[in-house]
Image 1 (cartoon, helix red, strand yellow):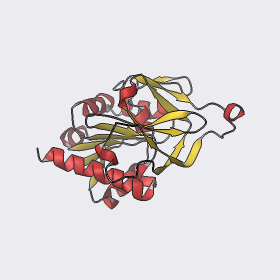
Image 2 (tube, one colour; image 1 turned 90 degrees about the vertical axis):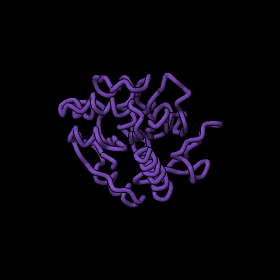
Image 3 (cartoon, helix red, strand yellow; image 1 turned 135 degrees about the horizontal axis):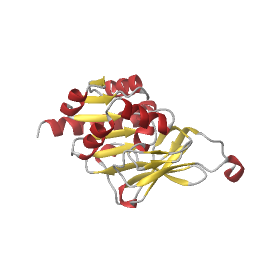
Image 4 (tube, rainbow, N blue to C red; image 1 turned 45 degrees about the vertical axis):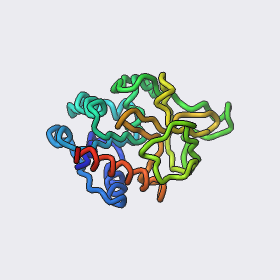
Length: 212
């Protein structure tokens, strides 16, 4: 079973529907016991970094989610769910993150510097990092288009976890991975065929993990 973490924020139902289209059932839940027993965990997110982090803390889910991201189960962070895995987000007055991955979350340069509007919104092309294959990208073209909506992006301290990048005035990290932990800045559930394939790959990984 795949658990989608409900912490009062995020694209919960759309993430669930995306997984269903990919052929996998997923339960939206804030029940610690269900999350602990899940074969795979999805952390979605839409909104401000601090609000999302505070939502996890208020429900007592911050440590549980951090443990889920570190215990070897398939784990997928989406959008702010990617950002929360890092140590610090500078949005607003700033906020700590879960600290699963080293690095921070910063704002895109203003339009006066790049000529591009913030937020970065719409379709954009991924560039997979050469030599870094990922099970989540199996069956996906080398440089597919996916759907983004965000004003902040992650700056990992460890370049080795970066699986794909994207360009929007600057090059930024669009996908990270380490073991069975994956996270993406784009929305796979809004990325049509490419996104559904990514979710299908995650579902298959979860099935394989459950059968071990």
